[in-house]
Length: 505
Image (cartoon, rainbow, N blue to C red; front, side, top):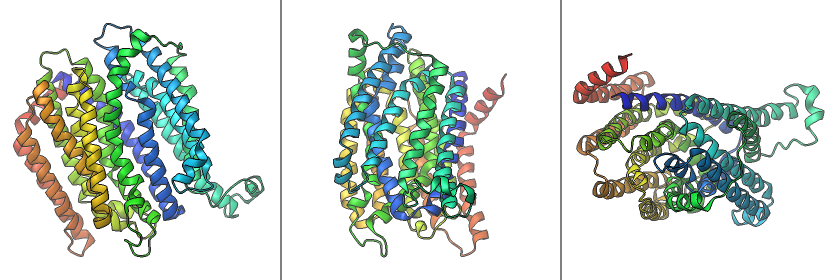
């Protein structure tokens, strides 16, 4: 119980920063839907899906390799850090330079003619993100969760501040609606027709300003490339690159390529890029599950490695998985049955609500991504990371097939189903292969029951409509209460035990 308490405490700190950060970032949704048109949101959806995909390539699994080789390998963590940081920096600068130099053909190939500057900014964003990845991993490795959280929050606040400045404040100054004496200062360079441009610029500036903060906290690093350290790290990390790509392949194919798979005129009155903007905006509503998954991953990955030598490791992993499913499935029901309220709160323009029905599928998909993160620890601590390649390849094929077959037929639902299908298949495969190589006594039947009931209640609440908003609110949230009672009845002994453990000083 003390180990679970430790993991929960670390997850809470990461979770608070994630929740605050994502909530602050989520507040940009009404700003974007209120100030930008659907075409600009479509461009935002595609380009940020591309960034998510390329981020994985720029860091190529070295964060997890750093965790692994800093513990249990008999190496000096300081030299592991210096070598990992040096290699990631070299690779990031090389790839970033390539994208920068070929920005024009990339822009034309992706149907953004005359906007090569967007992809030059993307090159800078990706390079800075990669260079900061290992320092952030070091904060996690050293258990400096609060420092990690504060730096991440600083980055998010800077990003949001620049977004508000460029998209709202400068816009109203330019139109003589705010601080008119400043209009002459910005009228010569401000572009009112820019949308995604200012989003990227805000991100770039925020990332750049975080570099000196991390260097101050961690000190300078010595450039060092030792073959004896990097070669085994490289062999360990490359399969994880493909596992990481699985986590974003779905993002790219379902969000970034949605507009390319959707037939013209599928949604009346909407271009394909505008429909992609609606799809991307509704994808944001799955953030409530995604932030929990992210917070858990931040805390669990170093925790799992640190506990890998414990003889009770399998039982510990099973307990973590069990309570992870319970917590996340409860969150899924809570969010899904209140989607009408959440949508009305955050969509500041008409037309976005037509995509709400896809969100429960996305919530379940992200839940299975979290399950996969739990399951995948077996091949990380046994150094069998090549299995991640096979699992990723299968997940990617499933994603492509679902996108190509279901988006033309089902539109938003087809795109969202690719998320669920990909992560569900990866979880199933990872579970069965893991049980052969590193058996863990998961409570599989009970977990599947929770997932099934949660999914049924989520869609049941979503489609339950009495015609009265007040009655709907109580009817929908009664389903949350029902699910909570079910959990209590099935887990009351464990709940009492956990409560006593957490109350101990």
